[in-house]
Length: 193
Image (tube, rainbow, N blue to C red):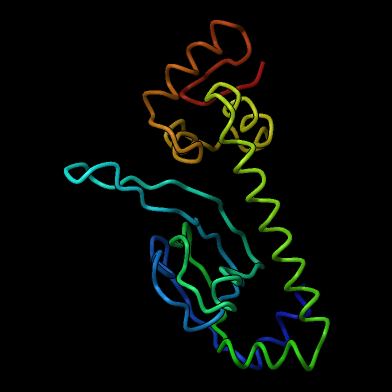
């Protein structure tokens, strides 16, 4: 895929975004196609539980470079279904949508890469649907197993955010799992038993 990104440099322009900078908001109409060249982006939806309550954010996924961002709404010229924020400094290639579509017609390999990227996003969506039926305890155990290598760097607050739950709910679940002997904690970090 990186070979194709090199070709895309000729039809796009690079922009740098700082950590916590917004790439696009849910509901905006795409004007260009984004390709994440370096960094990490969090895709999230804002949920308004009630008029008087502040909106909450539900993290849908983290996207790491190199990767397309929001290719479906961009190519279909539909509003972004979610917002995107940089979780670290990012380098993004912005490409005019019509220019990209022309490149796809001229180079079928671009279409294959785009289809592969869309299939990856479908897998992410399938995982989100499957995850929504799990209890917090099941979600936490799956998360801990999938991220075992980086547990020593993750705070419980970060884990709660990634699992779209409150730190208090996560704390209760951690206590339950500790009582069952399935996990341990040391200096606020979780260790699988």
